[in-house]
Image 1 (cartoon, rainbow over the protein chains, first blue to last red):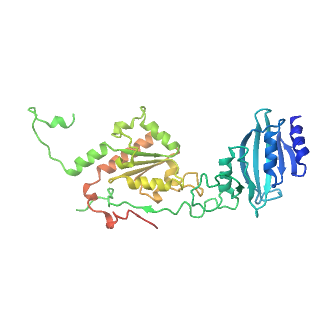
Image 2: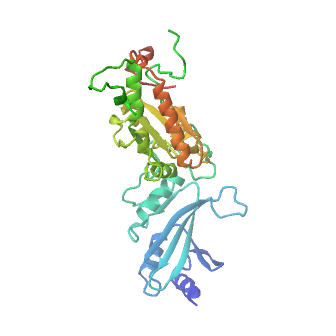
Image 3: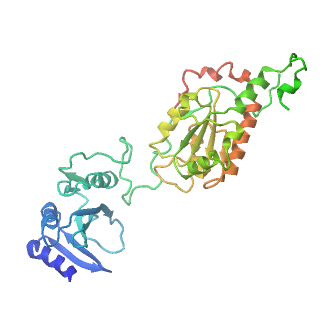
Length: 179
Length: 176
């Protein structure tokens, strides 16, 4: 019942924005176009029948070389939860490789702050109007986006380029002194 | 029992020894470790310090949380690329003579974290004296490593610290 209510509510208002909606093993998923994401999120948050007041997770998926064909290479995934009605909902927004920009949902859920920063540093997806979009976990001078599928797992010199400290004194105590 | 058994009954007497024996005895019996624990190996390290294994028996009673007053660096856990400059700074801040134990698979070789963000063994960038195998090692392994450090200190000589090798004292680090 509830499943249908969520789908109906979104379809009723934003029928043009929905690419796909399906249920997989009890998880409700709605795929949206990328242009009016903020408006739809605002609706999901404020609507009195849904009231998704909690952004449980926000991350991205790189579909490079994925077994099934996907509309675009990247997808940003929002996991929403409604404490009032115990609803769960997954929102998927596909964004093309050429234009990695999306509106920030920081204005709705404050927890998006760090989640968007992490998605930004790991995938290179920019969130418009984010208050402080800089690297969260990686060193500030880090180049590249580690969670993209074409990123080399062992890196390109990140873990090798450090100064080498040697012993300042010749205290090789394992060697017996001759004199 | 101890030194006092060499005293005469009237309380006088003297003994002859070498500077090395006295200095090394003092150094090895009161090592001040600087813990650099970044992961689960540090938990084993703490267990070794706690009452059951009690590393204070070996003279390392005082954990020095300032590198400037420490002479033994205990690296326990994985070291990511963001932490390596910190570790190097800590190593540089320690005064001579200093010794380093690398505890566990991650600190010694990167362990199972063969990724872009993880240092594949701290000995690539700072000198390490004793390695402890294990993931994480048992406190017994750690005590063994500690006793090996004591053996190294015992066989050291103050003469080794007279002049810096290759005038490198003022440029402690060089890039490859």
